[in-house]
Image 1 (cartoon, rainbow, N blue to C red):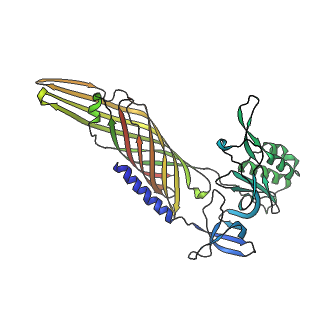
Image 2 (image 1 turned 180 degrees about the horizontal axis):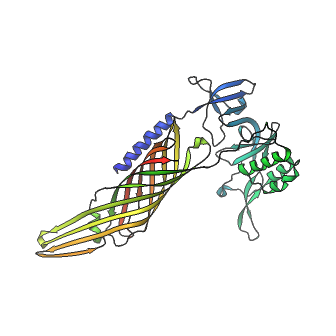
Image 3 (image 1 turned 90 degrees about the horizontal axis):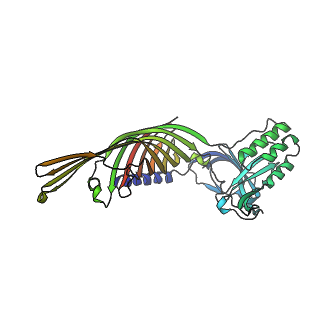
Length: 423
């Protein structure tokens, strides 16, 4: 339909714009393997996975130079500090569907960039490859030790498959932090996660006396943002059926419905990756109004039938979406994809039938659609742009409609235009 084609065109324009805006030069300090210090810029994407290389630019107009971990001692950009290290990487999958049946570790030595996520007496580092789990390392005086952890499949006494954990890192931490007996209980409870490990190392530093030269570099966590959205919705309804009982609906071309719409939004912004990925949930008010008259005349039988259908519905809808928002200067362009679930809060469902036979005239009234679906489901896509607080979005959705009759389809397509505000 025209609405969906228009949105696809807008999405292509936004994707094209984002491709042109991929570079994000930030001031950086790079120390090469031969101790050469470079002060310039790095194409900084606030990586979620550790970078395999960096693109260094001495000035804004210069050509970039690519440096790999073998070329660099460390580099600093923004709040991030990465060090080059030759370390073992544990390659076992961590997703339940891909777990192996062995408790043994799969180790491979590699030269990588490690991200420092806590700087203290014992520093904590992370390495995340998109194809494997996050590996954590603890360091003292430049020596990096992999904290070894693995999930694997096993069977219990009843021969049921269960997930077990090889927590060798607990023993490693016990040895590494053995000069502080007060935290032994905390070590046994620590989980293989950044916040849990950082909390333990904070407790250790307090135990041994944290020196003022040390600082805390907690990883950024999930951010929450509340917002408002308001706009208009252009809706069309399409009935389909093979039954003659519904032909007054199927054969009527209902005019589009133009209605106000709006609601509340909660954005859950994932850390790092320049905060490009967002889980968005909305509580939205939505409504439609359709009315028209269907006419059928049969002069040879002296009959005339008119059916006036009037349909008005209001919903409260929960939309759940994944948003990708790419920064371009002071704005972000974004695309959404998700699903919606709506509950009817008000309805008008009327039919008036005028039947003429010669000079006789009969009028009957009833429901246009005998059984109404109380819960409407839809899929949706959208695109827009936003600043820190204000934004605009165009969104297309298609739902299973109002009919709860198996023989009567009633899909509703919507094109929404929203103005948004984030607190």
